[in-house]
Image (tube, rainbow, N blue to C red; front, top):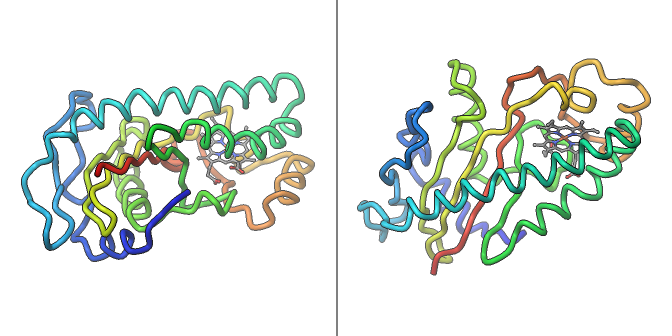
Length: 214
Ligand code: HEC
């Protein structure tokens, strides 16, 4: 997926990309833009495109989540976790690639990774740590959301993140008591796997969406 390290550097230099951003958790109504300014040349005023883009992202995320979960659950039913690992391994990156069209990039990121290709960039890492903090403070993971328009070297980009909670159905492969054979298969494909020992309700990662604007 195309990433600009210059953009990352710009973002690193940005004061607290998501510190003052969080929206009231229980309120699903789009909030006014926050923290749109990220570069010396950026205007601090709110970008009028933010609300519409956030609404678009809110449509895309459940479609992507449903595609992933649909294939996962079908594979679990037909062949149990061993079959489902194969499906996740092959299909998860493909489903993300299929969802990435019309200028959008769609993916999943986490701090405790299974597939190293899902590593967060600087913006995503900061959002993840903010979401982590909010989840620890008692916020519901499924309501964690952050959107902003950032101004980097390659122009303005819309960026959006949504929390992914751990559910009971995830524990067979991400829990603390994984079947030995299943764990062996996971380690065969992902020797550096860190995506285990999760409990239901915890933050597993984020759906991360972005779109270049100019
Ligand atoms: C059958 C085993 C299995 C189950 C069940 C499972 N996963 Fe995964 N998960 C995987 C595999 C394998 C990958 C690596 C996929 C890849 O290569 O992109 C993965 C990757 C992920 C990632 C991407 C970040 C990373 O660490 O690479 C997230 C987020 C994730 N899973 C969340 C979930 C959630 C939430 C559930 C429950 C709804 C779930 N998983 C259930 C096997 C599983």
